[in-house]
Length: 101
Ligand code: HEC
Image 1 (tube, rainbow, N blue to C red):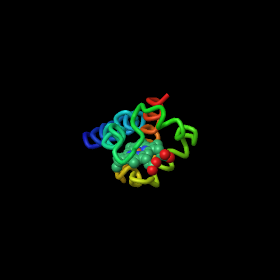
Image 2: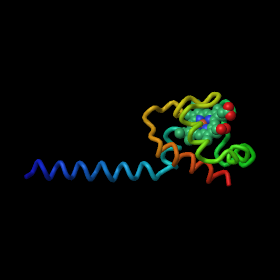
Image 3: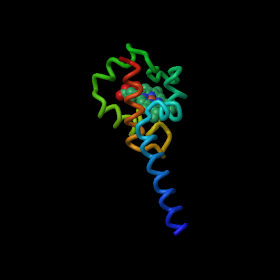
Image 4: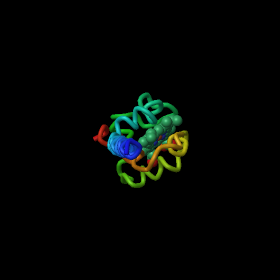
């Protein structure tokens, strides 16, 4: 009985954490993207820099997410963080694009 209850609690906790991470682009940005995109390291388009983001926004979000997965220029594949899920990358791109509107 106790074992089953503990297992259920563990499963529920994992489920909640998974949903929160997938939804929070700002948290992913602050964990995996801020190092380059806050100051523009190696010409990374800066957070909130409309002129730098305008031509990129034109490519469409799906293309940008794919670019982050494969890497581009000085940006390594998955931004150098192989543990990032597609959902996390997508949420972080949403966050960057929303800041550049
Ligand atoms: C090691 C530094 C670095 C990290 C970390 C990094 N980026 Fe980048 N990013 C760059 C650079 C440099 C470019 C510009 C690439 C170019 O145009 O040659 C770029 C470009 C981009 C672009 C535009 C791609 C295009 O087609 O022009 C997106 C979208 C992007 N980054 C998203 C992210 C996201 C999301 C994260 C975090 C998950 C992230 N980046 C983390 C350096 C980084």
